[in-house]
Length: 101
Image (cartoon, rainbow, N blue to C red; front, top):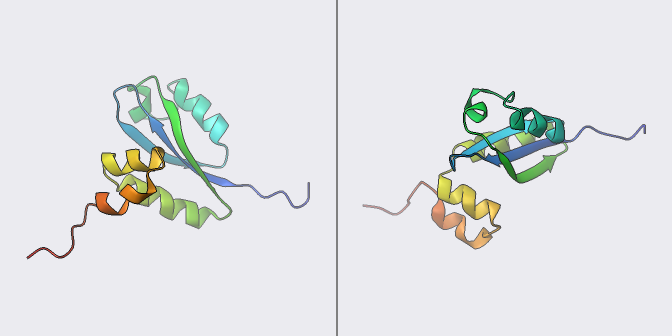
């Protein structure tokens, strides 16, 4: 298809130890297959099994990269609020606390 664009996806995995892994890929299905086989990198290979819990697709690679870095900086509680679609909780779970002092 001449108008087909490669989407860039940002994804989050819940690992066997309960921790979360954030990554990005043009082919999330293939990447998930790699992770599940222990071939997706050191972190996830040691924390099997892994489960896909969040995906967000972007038209532009740079936008996906910014989102990936943003999610990597989020706390566990904030990531879980995103996974569970608790949008109202997200602002209150930010690490930065303003108005102190």
